[in-house]
Amino acid sequence: MFLALALFAPALIQGDASAPAAPMPAPKAPSGMVWVEPGVFTMGWDGEDGRPDERPAHRVRVDGFWMDLTEVTNAQFARFVEATGYKTTAEIVPSWEELAAQLPPGTPEPPPGTLVAGSLIFAKTPGRVDLRDYSQWWAWTPGADWRHPKGPGSSIEGMESYPVVHVSWFDATAYAAWAGKRLPTEAEWERAARAGAEGARYIWGAELVPDGVHRANIWQGQFPFENELADGFEVAAPVGSYAPNALGLFDLSGNVWEWTSDQFQPDLYEQRVRAGGPGAVIENPTGPLRAADPRNPYSRDSYVQKGGSFLCHADYCSSYRPSARMATPPDSGMNHLGFRCVSTPALWEAQLERTRVERSASAEPSKKPQSPKKPQSVKKSDG
Ligand SMILES: [Ca+2]
Ligand SMILES: [Ca+2]
Image 1 (cartoon, rainbow, N blue to C red):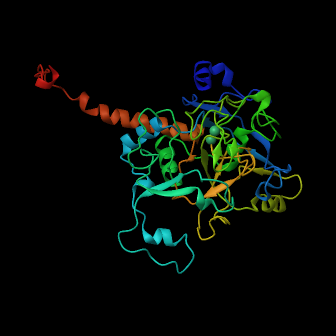
Image 2 (image 1 turned 120 degrees about the horizontal axis):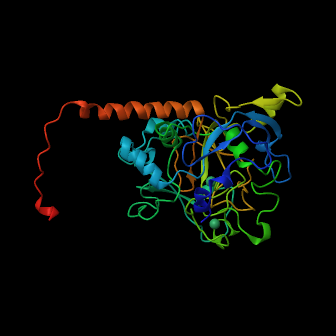
Image 3 (image 1 turned 135 degrees about the horizontal axis):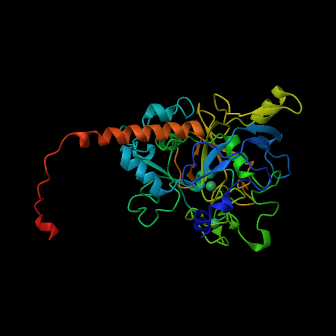
């Protein structure tokens, strides 16, 4: 409902109410995206519920960019796969070399033929568990992929407007390149999320459920075994099911996590502030060259994801706060992890040019003189 409102009332989503009007960027805004003005904001969080990797809050400046109004949907991803024949990571049998690089040295190789394609699916536990061991609620599921989000036998029929899930960072990056876009940096993502709520704990303000109205698809009850569904959804919701932020961006908080282009390091903000000195404004940060992720200590790469998901609970991770950070190796897919893209005037102009070239190339044969069209025979099945 909220998404329909925004799409049909574009005046509502022009610009951040807290900032002066920005000059209209050129070229024309791509459909389904909104312009995020260039500017300075406070990234990170020093508040009481912030984790060490969110500290210290510091000033960052980012250039302007367009951002997708919603998480990328199954329908959008299907168009990409149809156009390119792309196969996602979850549909390809992993190689032992790739897996071994993320495991403790000396981990024995599994017997030949036992590695299969698949992805991770959340499963509620029978009761209370030690929250430090997340393997208790994640099930490696052979045959789970974006078309089969609950594993073999499941499908996305009727789920066109749901966020695509089980997409690796590689898949998200490939989609973005095809669409004339890219993944947001962590700074761009947080800048967009905080629009209209600078310095607030949540994207919409100070209270988690203002006036009793749920603003994001997260988890109410007791994680990971009892979901009270107070917000209406147990797992992913169709994109745009909750009110957007001040820029008209939906589900930045909750629903599914969103990949960014930045590698993760837990003490990155401390390093930035140390290097920049007091009062420094960091320009367009893009993250470190290599990850140092305590949750994935053997993986060279681990990319930041933002916004939390339908699994985030106030007592467990509260990652629906805009400063919260999580990271995952780029070949991993899960049923609560998706993405959205950003674009820039330069990227979008290049995409328009590519489209023009492709169109004129495909129109080329029609320039040749053609013989008059013969009436086509009617197939039996047509009649
Ligand atoms: Ca929910
Ligand atoms: Ca989200």
